[in-house]
Image 1 (cartoon, helix red, strand yellow):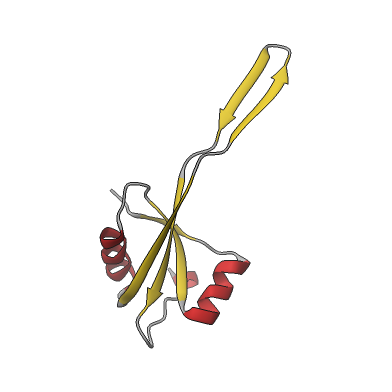
Image 2 (cartoon, rainbow, N blue to C red):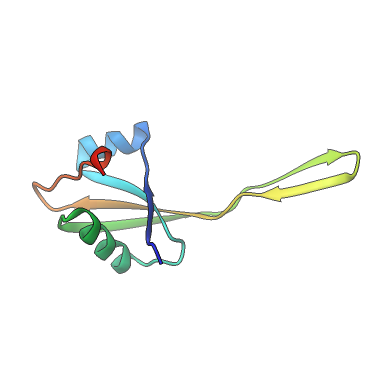
Length: 95
């Protein structure tokens, strides 16, 4: 089971990295904070100080067509914001 799916590269994520040294990742929805901490430490070779997680519910959309009401939804997402110990840095673009 792969816990870290991919790093989040956005303006807000880059701002958090520059300001607080916190890196954002999409992670498996069933992973807990301890598993996320161990996966980041193993993948990037850094010391993790704190892990915060957020679960985003799936978004449901419906549209009317000739065949009737078509309903669809997106997948559930889980994000993790990982704060590193003092002096630690991850180079996301190199991996």
